[in-house]
Length: 188
Image (cartoon, rainbow, N blue to C red; front, top):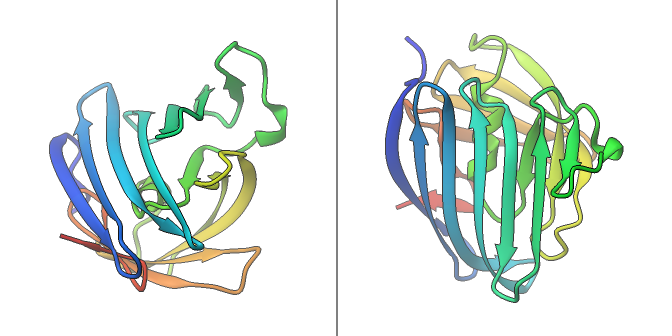
């Protein structure tokens, strides 16, 4: 058993509080994974509308992403897949060293990235990740440390941001994509 490796499919989630919807398409092929999405919603009482694209290598390591909001603000960063980040002009973003994944506030999808990259999918196995956390309101990235634990292989995982007193259980499908993020997002 394991997650599907090559697939092309579309997902939609709704926010469980407030009004929000995300439409996302993934194309996973032999050489890379391309994720394209549009999301509207609310975060901490602020309404947002964004579109984003994430390009990953075939091992689900983020190589680049672009996010832009409806006001024209955007953020584009590139990575070598080893935790080194670069601005669009090629300048190094050394403050983000060690982060392989991104965590985009306002979407359940980005939890899929570390789940897909867990070293082991065995019940009870936990792994810590450095991620690049991007708030949906400012687009000002910062490093965050998170832990993912396998509760049921290829089906259910616990997510815990290490800087906050919070955890939740995430249900995933056979692609490793988060289906439901309790109290926040539900797949439709």
